[in-house]
Length: 92
Image (tube, rainbow, N blue to C red; front, side, top):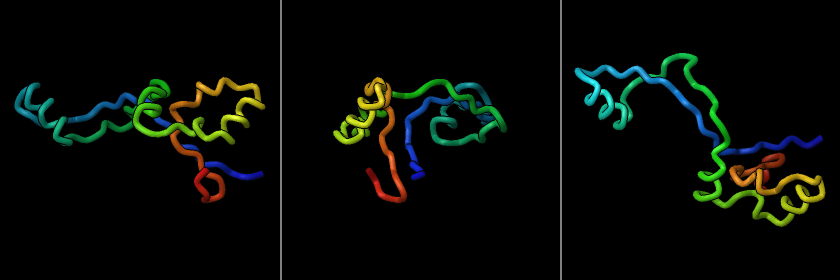
């Protein structure tokens, strides 16, 4: 059976440790990329369908993939957040 790699946009929540003198400085430092992720703090929230469909072309715009989903009686629009699917190293 072939193996597929699927790239999907998802929303996560994550907690960071930031060393700073006060809360405002901590927020500014965080926005600059400073801080370290608190171990085991990442939590899955939901698929980020709007981000995927706005920022990149969705895999469901491929007519072959759309037809396969329709034939499987699947809601095609539920996959808009998936921006890439790859089979055996070949981008679909």
